[in-house]
Picture 1 (cartoon, helix red, strand yellow):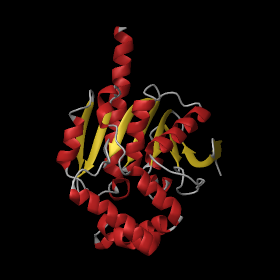
Picture 2 (cartoon, rainbow, N blue to C red; picture 1 turned 180 degrees about the vertical axis):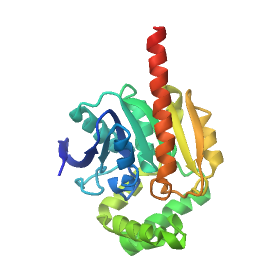
Picture 3 (cartoon, rainbow, N blue to C red; picture 1 turned 90 degrees about the vertical axis):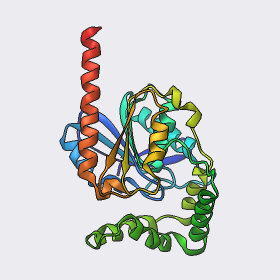
Length: 272
């Protein structure tokens, strides 16, 4: 079982394929299993796919202390250093997209491109509805525990009758969380922002937004306009957990994005 010992924590990760490195980062309360329908397709397409479980999640350590996006990003940065990754395509779902934004501002040379799926550069609850949403989530988690919370979330993520297996997998994945670690990870997202640093992100950015995500398309458009080199693409018939309900759309989108970046690189070298 691949693990790397970092400062104060040991991270589990999976790796497959060879070629240009692609780092896949999962969402809150989940694990690398978010990518089980995407990773094999990318590996078969000629990419080296690395999928870590973030600190406090999955099979990685769950050490005591405060969690947060900067800490998660530092762990992932150190993992990349230990694996010898110097220029990597970063793809992040939800919390994973937040970690990707943090990496892009903290270690721009590491991030060759950033693909953000149903996420954004800011988690500051500026409205009453957002504050109530976070408070309700924490209350439910404390009162009911991860497994019952997962049973509430699963039908919202996968409402179709034919998605029963996906609902079951969500309950198993989120339900397996250690309650205190999950609560600390959740609290650690609230108030996080790199919104004022978007101007410093120079790598190409692809924002993939599900048509039925929690947050509207307009919210994604607003921050895409602040990035120097970014575009927005909608995922059809999809909800928040897009790598599970629309893996084919994601694979086609990121493969096209990566090939475009390769073509740009070749053109720059030719002209240089």
